Image (cartoon, rainbow, N blue to C red; front, side, top):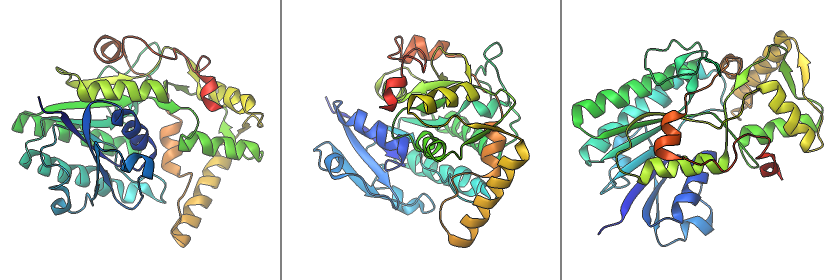
Amino acid sequence: MLKQKIAITGAAGNLGNLLAYGLQKKDVELNLLIHNKKISDDLSSQQNVSIFKTDLADEGSLFDALKDVDTIVHFAGVLFKANPEKFLSETNTRYFNNLLNVAVKQQVKKVILISFPHVEGETFPHKPADGTLDGNPISAHAQTRLEEEKLLFKYAEQYKFTPVSLRVGMVYGKNILMIDAAQWFARHYLLGVWKQPTYIHLISKDDFVNATIAAAIKPNIHGIYHIGDEGIQTLQQFLDDITTYKGNHKPWRMPLWIIMFAARSFELYSSLSGKISPLTRDFIKIGRISYYGNTERMRKELLPTLKYKTYKEGITLFE
């Protein structure tokens, strides 16, 4: 029996790389799609790993990478750049459309989109996102990801492949870029957060990888799954606890205008220098929205047992 062949877009990115390391240990063939970043030698040298330099803006660059592929897991995108509302419709929606066009031509059987609960708008532990496509999110990141989800299910219905959307909560642990950035700012007494409590759904990096591997390799997986743990907490509580655990300063409680001013400053610097912007106004828009997902399908079909039920159990992942 032939091994499953799984392609990961954005495989050199933070979460894509995590998944690649997890899947590399399974009995599968891996096609890792990269753009500018490189894959580490210890991963690229594995016998079941092939590396493809691709550009989602160019459909022609994708054909070899998707040849004989059974499943695609799609991460690729642009995050840390100024004025995301000006380019996300291109780098999210149109690039994903290109990927789907080639996937259909190469007869890929399953396409997994990594999404997030924000696409349904504001949700809470007592009223979680339940897997609909009729949300009305306010941020450009969430709006364009919802467009990607709609595109995925439209293509799947027309061309008869299996669509999967994994709406992932905030992934935490060491070497997660946004978490590491928060710790850096906290270490230098610069981390701030708004006063209004914002509920967030979390998932450890280990449980995220295990749930995504299950979505990729298990049969009869289809539709929308919310990926999150059992904890109920606010962003403010989470940041207080993880910074204190690392011996850093708790985030200051700041008026929103100060945080927006900082975001504008970062975006201006990014626009002038061409370097990344660790904070944007759209990040703040999406960050201030409470989000929780109904994880019933995840627990039933993907991950019956969590390694870490709450971030308090998984806080050692920051060591």
